[in-house]
Length: 101
Image (cartoon, rainbow, N blue to C red; front, side, top):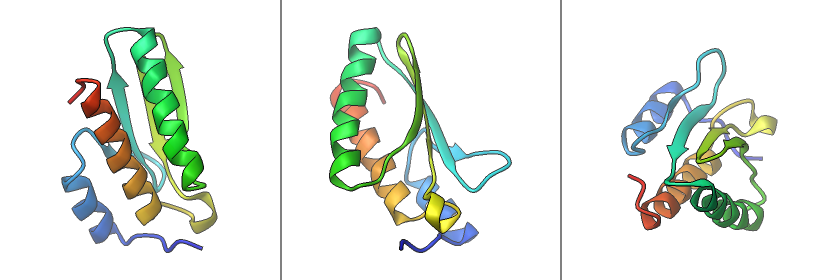
């Protein structure tokens, strides 16, 4: 099982994850991605899903038209772990490839 990050480690990791922030009321991180249209948002989700599946670590997310809201937490660890940070980095990289900063 992945080890939950300390508050200090989580804050340090977030400092290197543009757009991500702590989620109020729970030990999780979140980001909202906004794309130019639905097709681009869905393409992002498809690419991110492949990474998530490969790592057996899946996001909580919601898509409405061109917006994708993502929350990451490792449920069996009770909070944010390195697995969440790694998936957030991968999502940022995928979004960057699509021109979203």
